[in-house]
Amino acid sequence: MIDTDDYLQMSGIQHFSFCRRQWALAYLELQWAEDVRTAEGRIQHERCHDDNIVEKRGDLFTVRGLRVISHRLKMSGICDVVEFKADKNGIRLNGRDGLWIPFPVEYKHGSPKQNDADRLQLCAQAMALEEMLVCDIPKGAIYYAETRRRETVDISDELRSRAQAMAKEMNEYYLRGYTPKVKPGKHCNACSLKELCLPKLCGNINVNDYISSHIYDDSGAGTL
Image (cartoon, rainbow, N blue to C red; front, side, top):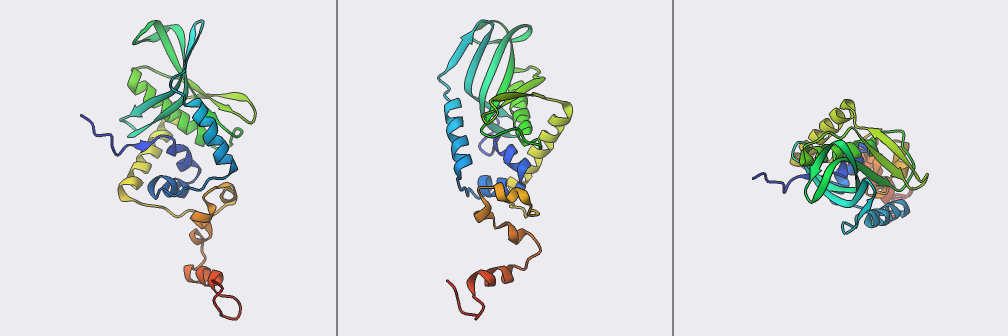
């Protein structure tokens, strides 16, 4: 029997792609600070993750809050929504007549991003579903609340390779208990962990000088 106790949270791949240090602070050191955007996003996901809801409409049925696991990625998580569409080329499902093709949908609070952070999370979910259901999932979607539109995502070989490499790196960091430093940038201003991260310490500034500037005033007297 495979021991899954040390499997990483699948949602972490989105944070890791955005900033490796943010991921380590939140998922390794268990530090978290919530702002308005993260609070709104959390509430939205709580609504999506009602796993008691199964909707059936014609040749489509929808499952919310579906738990998934990938032994290949050593990750587990929850899909916001998985739509199953009747198709002669689909797979059989326990308790369901006919053949079905799964289509994962990830819900995000904001708007589409230029980077692939959200797409990589969706890709990891698709890869986990493929392992569990023994099928191929060529596409999925991300629904953005700000635009109220879906973005269809091709689960390409290139995206799969990146998700696999990123999962490997995350697991290596986890085994080492390693929190990396990163180069500060504009993206730091949008991070809810900015005050916990202290991104200036990741740059070229001398740590002793940084601490002194926040403890002593110009006269040399302590300010704390």
